[in-house]
Each structure stands twice: as structure tokens, then as C-alpha cells.
Length: 99
Image (cartoon, rainbow, N blue to C red):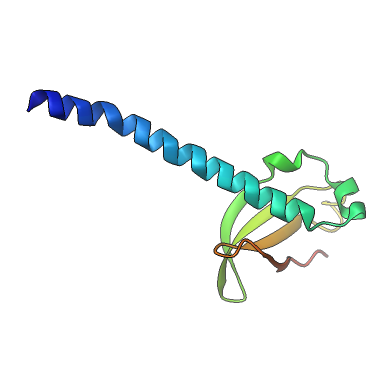
């Protein structure tokens, strides 16, 4: 019985690491979908590697979405580019307004 408990305790970190890797891969996919939706001119203004863009959960027209934020050289004037990606279909739904 003690061996079973020790085995279970030893396997918990392995299982939790697998989930983190798949979540990280999923975020990378979300970033890539958002990146590919940008136009050539918008991509030129992005001043960080797109693979490191912050991804957060948000709502867009009462729908649960991922918000991917790309910082640009025009942030002081217009703000960052924010792309909304549907959490279930992984389709770009729209963009945040830049001023």
C-alpha cells in the first residue's frame, strides 16, 4: 500500500508537466493564428517577437476569446494591436480599436 502511495505521489509532477507543455503549445498556436491575421504593414511595426506576445482570456461581443497583444512602434500614438481569437474554433473574430 505504501508503494502505491509513493508511486502516485511520484507521478503527479509528471502529469502536471504534460499539461503545462500542451497549454504552452496551445498558446503558441493562438499567437500564430493572430500573427498570420495581421497585414504586412502591421507586422513591420511590431517591435517584439510574435512568439512572446501576451495571451489572455477576454470577451468580445459576449463571446469568450483569447486576446493576443502585439506591442508596436506606434503604441504611444495608437496603442498595441490586440487580436481576438475564438477559444473553441480558433478563428480570428476581430481586433481592438486603436486610437
